[in-house]
Length: 469
Image (cartoon, rainbow, N blue to C red; front, side, top):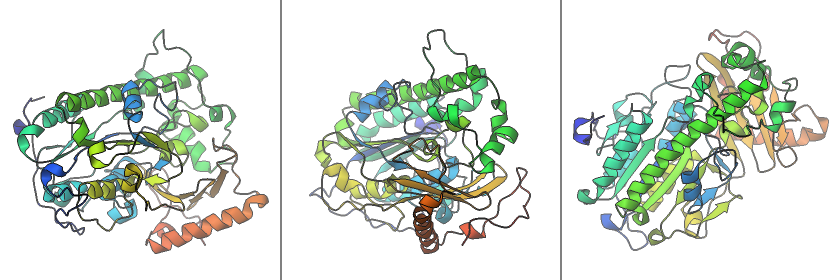
């Protein structure tokens, strides 16, 4: 790969999206470019929230663990949808997929290109030198791709992403302005190549999840088993435990590769003396089933392994950062990233589905809290199976357009093994959650009840909708 950003393809433009931006405003006594924090946002692809050594000793992620120990870690962090393109559209705009228009992956059902302004254009207008390197997966619309004046390379492998990021950081001192660097890594998404993975002789014990041993799919929506028998799960369904352990070991190895890249980026910040003037945010676009529930990859299911993602934010003391700690009493969604960045960068807030996390990150009063989290699902390639999830601290309720419902008591069943949707003892709980979900759908103009499921080949199904009011 070239060693100079000037020799890379750089796309520049003016953000013309509907979201407006007012230039920098005074905040906390720092109203000059030099008084604004630098921003580094690093995110992986397909990493569930426990795929870190700090959360599960099975994983080997020393760099992520060290950063977590120096950050505010959000234990209840979620994505708007467990799919790459739509989740990324939320991460970069602060809006849910049904509002960004990116409901599925690029090239698949619902996978329209993003056509609205992103955080990149907002930051660039606010005086920031911006750069985006790594997987983009949101199309080529000029409005959406604008705003990365310091470098924009949307198709690049993970080593190239790190190289470009380190070069961007190295030049930061000469730019005379604050910078915002976005690094998008592919791993552990390469879990799709697990069949080629060789388990090392010293790999140690490779445990299988509790739900792997007990899941039989009998009380779950039929599409979960169908994913395994007819779709991508065919490569492992019905195979012996050794292959499942190979899958988990591969997932651990791919996560370790990503961790190594994170370490190199952080080392570059330290080397250049920029760590204490930079807010570092690390997260993922969505999760992976990682053998839980005898499922792999991602598909038409809303288990926590799919929708719950890592999120750690390190705010230097110079910008009001509190001491490192773990926050487990606040539901956070990836639409919160944009308003949080704008708040710290002294830029005017935008209309979004997110809330700023700055009060929690600085110890200030006034943190807005959610009563529940919503997550959306649309398709897997051509196979459309619309789902909506509503999750509180205690319960999770999933409604499928065609395949029924799920209800889990997360306090007593954190592994989401027992589906209580048909249990009369929990009828009131289900009804209450369904009513709140319907109210959210109406308030947000979510087209959920107008959507239709299809066959795996994308052909319409004639059966009536189940679960709609």
